[in-house]
Image (cartoon, rainbow, N blue to C red; front, side):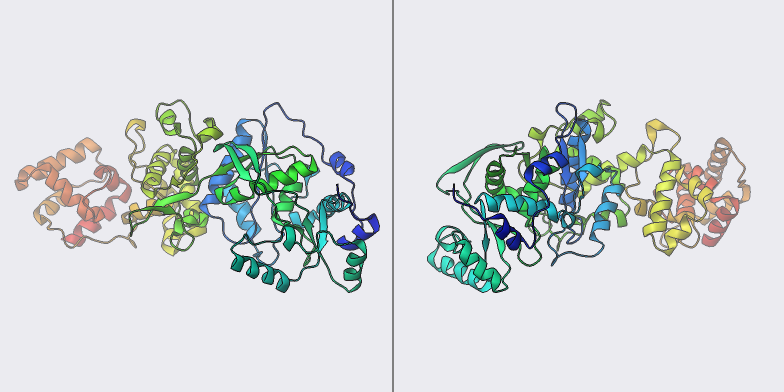
Length: 524
C-alpha cells in the first residue's frame, strides 16, 4: 500500500481538519433496525430542471419496493452541481411526489438529506482516503486537462486522467505544499488501481449477472471550485451512511457501476443492490419506429403535463405500474388486487429493455379509474383541478358545485353500467360543457324536424317522470309520422348540439324546464 498524507497536510488540502473519523460516522449512522428483507431505497434527483416521466417511473419502483417490504423510502436532494442548479426545482420535486401519492420517510437521524449540507461527512471520508493513500490532491488546470484529452483523442485511446496521464498521483508532500503555498486549490482524485483488462462481476436485479471492465480512471472525488463532492463520491458516502439497500436508477448510469463497486470495495463497505431500469420509449409519429421519449419532442415527458392537462395521477401510476409489473393488469381485471400498491413488484420482472409508453393505453386506465370514483370524489377532483390549472371558463363551470354534481351524476347510479367517457379532469369539463349556457354551441348544421320540436313543446312538462316523458315522445312521433328515435335525436341535438350524449331524459332534467324550452325555441 502506498503512503498517504499526514494529517496536517490533509487539513490544508481539504481547507480544514475533518470533523469525524470513520468510526464516529459509523456510530452516528448505525445499521437500521428493520424487519428481515426490508428494503431501504431513495429517490435522489438533482434540482437542475423539470421532473420527467423517467423520474416518475424510477421513484415508483423505489417507493413500491420499500412499501411492500416494510422498508423505508427516502428523498435525497443531490444539489452539489451548483452551476446547473435551478431555483424552485426542489419544490417541483416535492410537489410531484405529493401529487402522485408518494410519501417519503426522511428520519432525522440519517440526515441531512441535501448533499450540500453533508460536506463534513464527505470531507471526513476523503480525509481517510488521503491518509490511506487511496486518494490524492491534483493540481491539473482545466487547460492542462483539455490538452491531455486532445492528445488522447488524436492517439485513439480512452480520454481521462489515468495512469501516465495522472500527473499528480504520486506527487511528494513537498511538491504538494509548494502548490498550496502558491495559492492553488486542488481537486481530490481517486487513486485507482483498476485494470481495464480485468473484469468486475456483479448481479443486477433486472439484468442478472453482469461483468464489466475494471475502472482505471482517477475520477474527481472533491471538486476544487466549491469543495463539494462529485456524484460518484456522494453516492458512495450517502448510500452507505443512509444504509440504502437497493439503488434504482436509469440504464444511462450502467457505465458507472464498475467505478462504484471499486469504491465500495476500497472502503470495505457492503455494496447496495443495483436495479438499472430501461428507458421509457414511444412510437414516433413521423417514422413509426420506437424511440426514447424526448424532452424536446414529447410534452408528456414532463410530469407537469399530466397535472396541467388534468390526468388522474392515480391512473398514471396504474399504467406505469402495469409496465413495471407484467401481470398486474390481468390480476386487477380478475379482482385479485384493488390497485398497483396491492400487487407485488418483482424486480426480476421489471423490463430490461425500452418500455413502450402509449397515451391511448393510458386513456383506458384513466377511464377505468374515473369510472370507479364516487360522484363526490369525481366532483372534488374536477373542482380542484379547475381552480388550480383551469381557464376562466373552467372556473365558472365549477363555481356552482351542486349543479356540477348533478351534471356529473348522470349515468353513475348503476355500478354495472357506469359511463366511461371521462379521461381527464379537463376533458370531463369539456365533455359536459353544453350544460352551461355560456359554453353551449347550438348545432346549426343539423336538419331539424321543427314540427317534432313544436309538438314536443306543446305537451312538455319538466315534472314528468321518465315513463311519462317517453310516452309523450312516442305520441309526438305518431302524430308527426316518424319514429320515436327521430324525436329523441332532434331533442338531443337541440339540447346539447351533439348527436351522442348520455341518457337524454337525465340531461334534460339537469338542464331544467326553462333551459329546455329556451334551447328548443332557439332552434325554432
